[in-house]
Length: 513
Image (cartoon, rainbow, N blue to C red; front, top):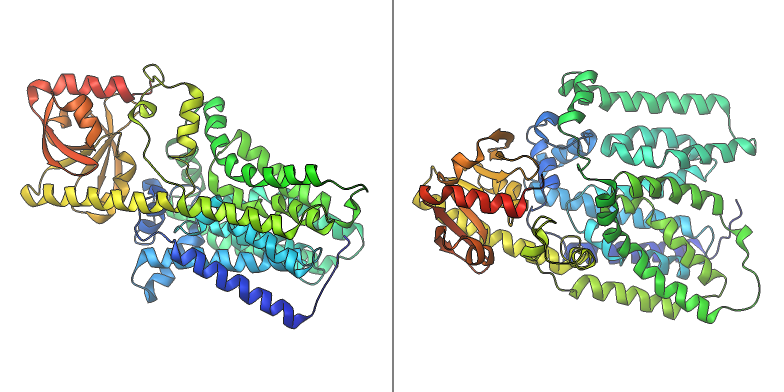
């Protein structure tokens, strides 16, 4: 692989310090202050009591990630702060290694601009300002190519994969084709010592076993661990078309920032061919294509894009290096992304879009557009609004608990995404949500445990229902009476004579089968 090195070591340190300061300030200033995402809370609860059977955390396990959190929690009592610090550390370290990788082909100013282009991307910014594990993908991806393109460091690659898989198993699988290519490229040029190669892989396997064996033993052994995928699979039970529908909403945040760059390039295109041989195109393709195939057809989750965000934006670096773009325009795109993330407003899904397709009034395109900028919005305003919503819901729960400490609280489908956050805030209260795929089933949240039960219709009259205020006014006002009314949410109670009608209303609007 050809490379170009520019500048002095002292100047490089200055750029690295700039990246560290910018990353730390941008992430901490917009960081989440409350737990509200169910998966994140599952990881936090796993630090207290690890149980894959009870989705603490969800599969495939994140064993080392949980152990790191647990160890840091020994020194820092605040679990949320621990997870934010870890996410910011992963992002900051990842940005430094990304910059170091880019300087092999581009000058330092252009490399800095590409790093800022990545950091300002709304999807990247959102995920790395949250107590999520996805920031680790950014670091892991950068470390993989840093080790894998250096003849001295490549022997650390098996060790990296052996440990990284314990933090996030799927990341190692998705980058495995790249891993194979990096070794192949060195073998092709006779740069590999076979004794070191085998010793490195043996060490990597040992490191893998050191966390994998305890993880599967905690589930009851390998067969029990595999069996959990039949009941606790994290892959959503949706069709391929539904999957692609949701996946496309996340793709927007990767494609849209590239569009003005491509348009500017086409308008400003100069004569002369691009010097593609200067760049590691095979590496970039093996880096992008296998994960993208998985994202497209198997899992749509936004966080996985952090594995391939560097090679995606490497293209902008090529255009800068070939004088097909100007630095001013890249700064303009960075500013646009930043403005979007900081200021784009957030609102909750409309009641119509939450309803079943058979009664939904909106067109498919309208639903897609709405969800792209509501459920899947990558914006600081979403973080702040969801925190505000959770505070209001917690206030209502507190009022309910003060009047009757034994009441079960039903979080209906307009607020059910906050169930685990409220469970963590109120471990002594029993919360339930509807299972929208199985009629008459419900999910019970109590303490740190989650369980699926049946006879949902029996608990309506024995519970206080928390719902969105507009849903109560539109559908429930004649079937129930409000107990507490807030700005956005209400708690209601239903009389036994209206129980059948209430259950039918919910089933008609939300049940997916």
